[in-house]
Length: 462
Image (cartoon, rainbow, N blue to C red; front, side):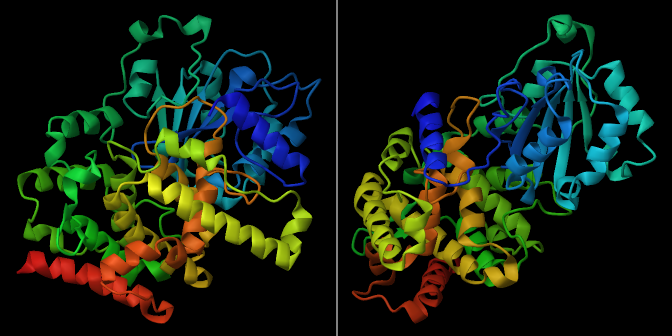
């Protein structure tokens, strides 16, 4: 799907009366497109927000208060989760006043500050450093522990993936790669983790493998057995994740998830059935993050390019009014369910379909308890849309395929939401195979799917 096609679909949705607010870089005719946008996920599956102050407009032509309000609208959905910011500093002539910056800082909701995990400043200028030093008394000390100065694109590449980022190097900084030394100490970086994982043959990996390598099929029953770590994460999330506030939105508080992933990867390569995999992490966010990383790093993403193209055929409402009409809305939902079941699932291999049945059973279970965990099907779909699309390259903007969830848009997120809401209808055939039944009983479905996972785990225990 081309950028122009994506933009056209967005405009059509807005013309039908649907409010679409995403960090797509579009802030009007007087603001350059690259000011702020989402650029995929980092190596820990956190959303990346890119801000380029070279694109700041002339305050004589653009009202900065209105611009800030627009930025907050477009980023509100993203900052509900942990996220990172990549800030490209520049000697741009248009700078907001210090008084305005202080006012803007205080106007940000707590989630903007609390959920920010890293703030990368690329090409930090004297003005940028002076600004941060001046505001030190009013900025939380925690912010400075999240701050990373980045002096070169090569250094930035070692920290975050750049495939969906529009990297524009200012003319004044062309030689910075040779003028500055990278900072001495970092947490395990994207490139370091990738290098270690790449040393392991693909057929021995857990992360970055193919589902055909890690799921084994029982020829007589047609049931695919999942690897022990995956079973354990799913079971823990069924047990405690369903009542965990904001599950899948946050990193573990005391464990570096990159370290945990590498340890799991190396142990799995050494012994697929290691008893260590049976240990239950003391933080459910560890299981949640590792499960996301497993799907995100699959060598062949669950949602391939071809499948994302099929999503564009998803039936859509003609107007907001249609959703208010119960009979029309129900008819549309039936068409959307039938579309996913008949047009999307048949394009997936049987091993992927069974794997997704287990995943969406969990996500459906979590969504059913959204009053306790605040994770509705909408919130879960915003997270899992980009996860299932995976790491393949796409244009820098707009970020349509991934974070957008709306009944008016044929996006990956919208398809994921349908799969969560109608899991038992869409995956009926896979559920019948896994449970060895002909008819599904909704009242005991989740319980029986959990039992099926426990039975797989008991095979390894024996």
